[in-house]
Image (cartoon, rainbow, N blue to C red; front, side):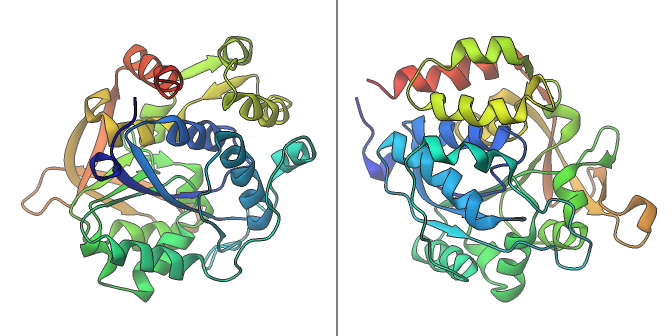
Length: 298
């Protein structure tokens, strides 16, 4: 059973796949999700080309020809904290493309969003560098998005999360963007959705999750746990009820170097710009996530 393209949700993914394993877990979900029309992928952070190759490997297994564009490798002003893509060592075992358009990621995002005004959900699950440059270069683009969904920040309590910490200036630009739906799923919520490596391995018996598991074995050398940061953010695009949200305003610390990248959440207010996840249905999410891989076979 398939959904007509016109009824699917159009998604653009911006990812730093190749560091934490949750990006690959997220991309596999989007490729398997029958309600998702994945319009393209941009990569961000160190070794963006290798990150594009990793994304390509998953698309190849899925039998999907998704446009992939390597993006910006360095943060706007802060020091580089993520220079390499460790999971690239698994690429030799998986078919993937090696040539991608260069220096066109921001233009690709702009043109794709402009071609589908009010229809695209932009899912950003890495440092916000690409998205900040997109919004700074084309100030009207935020108004043309259906939604902006971020795995970024820590809100209850406030704290420093990896994506915001990697490029705090970019994160601040992105949080100022006037998007109709500006949603964040932060570290305080995503860390509630964890799974031991041994249990995750048992779930990876479908073709699309096999390369993910291969990439994950690299990740498991430093952590024997999967935390579903990015896939949780993605899943809320298709089932918002998986998390409970509150409205208010988010800001990012950029003045105090010791706290640079820390996110602050102010609930309510007359002009609220952001919705932030405050709780998650863990069992419901895991059922939803692994369920799409059986649905995609129908």
